[in-house]
Length: 110
Image 1 (cartoon, rainbow, N blue to C red):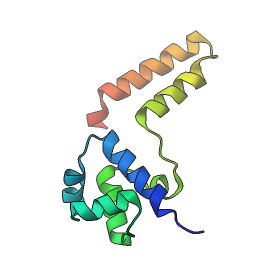
Image 2: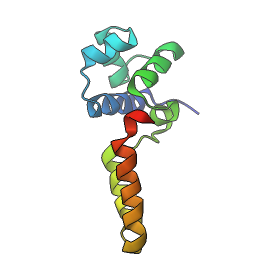
Image 3: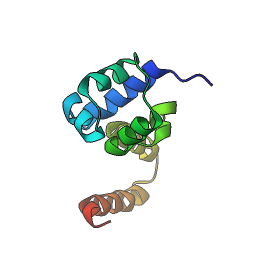
């Protein structure tokens, strides 16, 4: 399997922008230069495994999200849940959504 560094860079950039991080801030957090991060995001330079690991950690995404495009944005996940529950019984969907709300309200305690 050949790695597509351009696609990986795009996924890193998408994860960064979704988290409202600037290139400067992400580079600082990953201990790399902003110029190098720009090259990574454009796919014009290859990163070390250590840098890849740092970026995944800082962005809180798994390696497969960056390598294989299994990343789903929060809005995609919410849309997916809505689609999955659209044709279900409202009596069963309501307790599910209440559970999600309780989890969200207590996320800092999990």
